[in-house]
Image 1 (cartoon, rainbow, N blue to C red):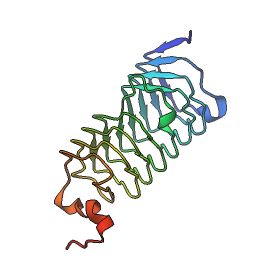
Image 2 (cartoon, rainbow, N blue to C red):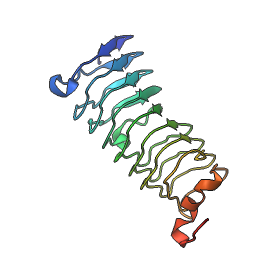
Image 3 (cartoon, one colour):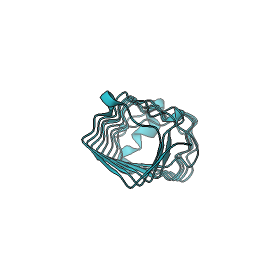
Image 4 (cartoon, rainbow, N blue to C red):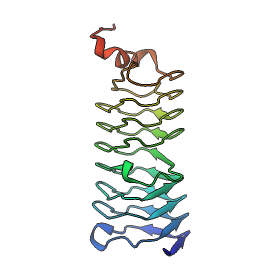
Length: 189
Protein backbone atom coordinates (compact mmCIF):
# COMPACT_ATOMS: atom_id res chain seq x y z
CA UNK A 1 0.00 0.00 0.00
CA UNK A 2 1.31 3.43 -0.98
CA UNK A 3 1.63 6.19 1.57
CA UNK A 4 -1.06 8.87 1.67
CA UNK A 5 0.00 12.51 1.47
CA UNK A 6 -2.89 14.88 2.21
CA UNK A 7 -3.34 18.65 1.99
CA UNK A 8 0.35 19.37 1.47
CA UNK A 9 1.76 22.27 -0.55
CA UNK A 10 4.87 21.83 -2.67
CA UNK A 11 6.58 25.01 -3.94
CA UNK A 12 9.61 25.52 -6.16
CA UNK A 13 10.66 21.86 -6.09
CA UNK A 14 12.73 20.36 -8.90
CA UNK A 15 11.56 16.77 -9.06
CA UNK A 16 13.40 16.29 -12.38
CA UNK A 17 16.60 16.08 -10.29
CA UNK A 18 15.37 14.51 -7.06
CA UNK A 19 12.64 12.19 -8.37
CA UNK A 20 9.11 12.09 -7.01
CA UNK A 21 8.06 9.91 -4.10
CA UNK A 22 5.41 7.34 -4.95
CA UNK A 23 2.16 7.65 -3.07
CA UNK A 24 -1.42 8.85 -3.09
CA UNK A 25 -1.57 12.66 -3.13
CA UNK A 26 -4.93 14.03 -2.05
CA UNK A 27 -5.89 17.73 -1.94
CA UNK A 28 -2.25 18.73 -2.55
CA UNK A 29 -1.00 21.76 -4.45
CA UNK A 30 2.13 22.00 -6.58
CA UNK A 31 3.31 25.53 -7.41
CA UNK A 32 6.25 26.40 -9.66
CA UNK A 33 7.57 22.81 -9.58
CA UNK A 34 9.57 21.03 -12.26
CA UNK A 35 8.36 17.53 -13.17
CA UNK A 36 9.94 17.43 -16.64
CA UNK A 37 11.00 13.86 -17.56
CA UNK A 38 9.98 12.74 -14.06
CA UNK A 39 8.55 9.25 -13.55
CA UNK A 40 5.04 9.71 -12.14
CA UNK A 41 4.03 6.11 -12.84
CA UNK A 42 1.46 4.51 -10.54
CA UNK A 43 1.01 7.69 -8.49
CA UNK A 44 -2.51 8.86 -7.59
CA UNK A 45 -3.37 12.57 -7.66
CA UNK A 46 -6.82 13.19 -6.20
CA UNK A 47 -8.27 16.73 -6.20
CA UNK A 48 -4.79 18.23 -6.64
CA UNK A 49 -3.76 21.50 -8.31
CA UNK A 50 -0.69 22.13 -10.43
CA UNK A 51 0.14 25.83 -10.95
CA UNK A 52 3.04 27.22 -12.99
CA UNK A 53 4.59 23.74 -13.22
CA UNK A 54 6.62 22.11 -15.97
CA UNK A 55 5.36 18.56 -16.55
CA UNK A 56 6.78 18.17 -20.06
CA UNK A 57 7.49 14.56 -21.06
CA UNK A 58 6.66 13.26 -17.58
CA UNK A 59 6.21 9.48 -17.53
CA UNK A 60 2.56 8.64 -16.85
CA UNK A 61 2.29 4.83 -16.78
CA UNK A 62 -0.86 4.00 -14.78
CA UNK A 63 -0.83 7.47 -13.19
CA UNK A 64 -4.22 8.47 -11.77
CA UNK A 65 -5.56 12.00 -12.20
CA UNK A 66 -8.90 12.38 -10.41
CA UNK A 67 -10.41 15.90 -10.42
CA UNK A 68 -7.01 17.50 -11.07
CA UNK A 69 -6.55 21.11 -12.21
CA UNK A 70 -3.59 22.23 -14.33
CA UNK A 71 -3.18 26.01 -14.44
CA UNK A 72 -0.46 27.99 -16.26
CA UNK A 73 1.57 24.79 -16.80
CA UNK A 74 3.95 23.66 -19.52
CA UNK A 75 2.90 20.14 -20.50
CA UNK A 76 4.62 19.25 -23.77
CA UNK A 77 4.80 15.69 -25.09
CA UNK A 78 2.64 14.05 -22.45
CA UNK A 79 1.03 10.66 -23.16
CA UNK A 80 -2.19 10.74 -21.15
CA UNK A 81 -3.42 7.53 -22.79
CA UNK A 82 -0.96 5.67 -20.53
CA UNK A 83 -2.76 7.02 -17.43
CA UNK A 84 -5.20 4.90 -15.50
CA UNK A 85 -8.76 5.26 -16.78
CA UNK A 86 -10.20 4.98 -13.26
CA UNK A 87 -12.05 8.25 -12.49
CA UNK A 88 -9.77 10.16 -14.91
CA UNK A 89 -10.83 13.82 -14.72
CA UNK A 90 -8.80 16.94 -15.46
CA UNK A 91 -9.34 20.65 -16.07
CA UNK A 92 -6.75 22.60 -18.06
CA UNK A 93 -6.41 26.41 -17.90
CA UNK A 94 -3.82 28.65 -19.58
CA UNK A 95 -1.46 25.79 -20.39
CA UNK A 96 0.82 24.70 -23.21
CA UNK A 97 -0.14 21.12 -23.96
CA UNK A 98 1.35 20.82 -27.44
CA UNK A 99 2.50 17.48 -28.92
CA UNK A 100 0.59 15.46 -26.33
CA UNK A 101 -1.75 12.52 -26.76
CA UNK A 102 -5.11 11.53 -25.30
CA UNK A 103 -5.60 8.51 -27.58
CA UNK A 104 -8.83 6.66 -26.61
CA UNK A 105 -9.19 8.68 -23.36
CA UNK A 106 -12.59 9.42 -21.85
CA UNK A 107 -12.66 13.22 -21.56
CA UNK A 108 -16.40 13.79 -21.44
CA UNK A 109 -17.24 17.22 -19.95
CA UNK A 110 -13.54 18.18 -19.73
CA UNK A 111 -12.77 21.90 -19.93
CA UNK A 112 -9.76 23.24 -21.80
CA UNK A 113 -9.50 26.99 -21.37
CA UNK A 114 -7.06 29.39 -23.08
CA UNK A 115 -4.73 26.49 -23.85
CA UNK A 116 -2.40 25.66 -26.72
CA UNK A 117 -3.33 22.20 -27.98
CA UNK A 118 -1.22 22.20 -31.14
CA UNK A 119 -0.62 18.76 -32.65
CA UNK A 120 -2.48 17.02 -29.82
CA UNK A 121 -3.86 13.58 -30.68
CA UNK A 122 -7.53 13.18 -29.72
CA UNK A 123 -8.01 10.04 -31.85
CA UNK A 124 -10.89 7.85 -30.62
CA UNK A 125 -11.46 10.05 -27.54
CA UNK A 126 -14.77 10.66 -25.88
CA UNK A 127 -14.92 14.47 -25.87
CA UNK A 128 -18.71 14.59 -25.59
CA UNK A 129 -19.82 17.82 -23.88
CA UNK A 130 -16.18 18.97 -23.59
CA UNK A 131 -15.54 22.70 -23.70
CA UNK A 132 -12.68 24.25 -25.69
CA UNK A 133 -12.66 27.90 -24.59
CA UNK A 134 -10.22 30.08 -26.58
CA UNK A 135 -7.90 27.17 -27.47
CA UNK A 136 -5.35 26.94 -30.29
CA UNK A 137 -5.98 23.56 -31.96
CA UNK A 138 -3.58 23.89 -34.88
CA UNK A 139 -2.87 20.44 -36.35
CA UNK A 140 -4.76 18.66 -33.55
CA UNK A 141 -5.96 15.23 -34.64
CA UNK A 142 -9.63 14.31 -34.39
CA UNK A 143 -10.22 10.87 -35.87
CA UNK A 144 -13.18 8.69 -34.87
CA UNK A 145 -13.65 11.06 -31.94
CA UNK A 146 -16.92 11.55 -30.04
CA UNK A 147 -17.52 15.32 -30.22
CA UNK A 148 -21.26 15.26 -29.51
CA UNK A 149 -22.31 18.43 -27.66
CA UNK A 150 -18.65 19.65 -27.55
CA UNK A 151 -18.20 23.43 -27.61
CA UNK A 152 -15.61 24.86 -30.02
CA UNK A 153 -17.22 28.30 -30.45
CA UNK A 154 -14.26 30.32 -29.16
CA UNK A 155 -11.43 28.09 -30.37
CA UNK A 156 -9.48 28.31 -33.59
CA UNK A 157 -7.11 26.74 -36.14
CA UNK A 158 -8.77 23.32 -36.01
CA UNK A 159 -9.59 21.00 -38.88
CA UNK A 160 -12.26 18.42 -38.09
CA UNK A 161 -13.77 16.05 -40.65
CA UNK A 162 -17.49 15.69 -39.86
CA UNK A 163 -17.53 12.38 -41.75
CA UNK A 164 -14.89 10.79 -39.48
CA UNK A 165 -16.23 11.99 -36.11
CA UNK A 166 -19.49 11.91 -34.15
CA UNK A 167 -20.58 15.55 -33.94
CA UNK A 168 -24.32 15.78 -33.26
CA UNK A 169 -25.02 18.91 -31.22
CA UNK A 170 -21.43 20.19 -31.33
CA UNK A 171 -21.16 23.99 -31.24
CA UNK A 172 -19.02 26.08 -33.60
CA UNK A 173 -18.85 29.77 -34.40
CA UNK A 174 -19.57 30.96 -37.92
CA UNK A 175 -15.94 32.14 -38.17
CA UNK A 176 -14.65 28.61 -37.51
CA UNK A 177 -16.85 26.72 -39.98
CA UNK A 178 -13.96 26.65 -42.47
CA UNK A 179 -12.23 24.10 -40.22
CA UNK A 180 -15.12 21.72 -40.86
CA UNK A 181 -15.00 22.13 -44.63
CA UNK A 182 -11.20 22.07 -45.18
CA UNK A 183 -11.12 18.63 -46.81
CA UNK A 184 -13.51 19.84 -49.52
CA UNK A 185 -11.24 22.71 -50.60
CA UNK A 186 -14.08 25.20 -50.10
CA UNK A 187 -13.12 28.82 -49.60
CA UNK A 188 -15.27 30.96 -47.30
CA UNK A 189 -15.18 34.73 -47.44
